Length: 278
Image 1: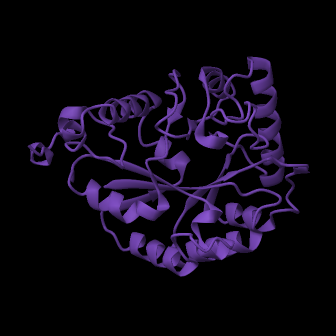
Image 2: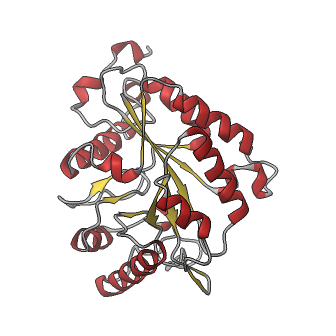
C-alpha cells in the first residue's frame, strides 16, 4: 500500500470559511479524510467554536483531524530573513505559545490536539523538544528544514503539494513493495475559488482528485495521526534522514530513489538501477 495523508494549512477564525465548507463537502462526498492545520489566534481573533462550526462538525463526524498550526502564524524574525514563528525564540517563549495555542484548539474542538504544524514549515530543536515534552504525537513541517532530534516525536514532513499528488503516486508505484508515504499539502490559494486566478486547481478538480484517490486499490488514506501510528518515531526519523541524504546527492543518485515519498525502510530497498542515466 501507498500511505497518503492530505494536510490543509491555515484554517482560522478569519479564513475563507465558504471555501472550507466546499472542500469538506467534496471530502464527504468521496469519503476522503484530511488533517486541517488550524491557526489558534489569527491576528486579533482567538479561535472559538462559534467561529468555525463547519470544522467542529466535520471533526465530530470523523472526516478530519485538527492539528495545531503554530499560535498566530506571525514571524518572529526580521524582514528579509527566512520567516519562522518559533526558530530562535527561547524555551519559555516557545512553550508559552505552543501551550496557549493548544489550549485554544482543545477548547474549541473538545478533544486532545496531537499534531503540530509549524508556520512557514520552520522550527528548531527547542520547538521539537517542547512538543515532545508536551506529549505531541507528530511534527509536520517541510523536509527541506531542520531534522528534529527527538525519540518520541514522529516527523511527517510535506513531501509534495496537492497539485502534484497524482504524479507522486505514479512515481511511488515504481516501488510496489516500498511501504512509501506521501504527505500532500494544500492551501486556500491552491484553488481558483479563493480568488486567485492563477491557482492550479478548481473545486471541481479537487473533487475529481478525491474521487480518483478513492478508486486506487493501492492507496490508503490517513490523517497525519493515523500515518504517524504506522511506524514508531524512530522509523519516521530515519525516513526523513534518508530523504535529506538523497536530496543532497548528485542528480543521477537522486533519480534512483523516490522524490515525493518518505522511505521507512533501508535505502537498499529502494534502489532502482534503471533510474540512472549516463
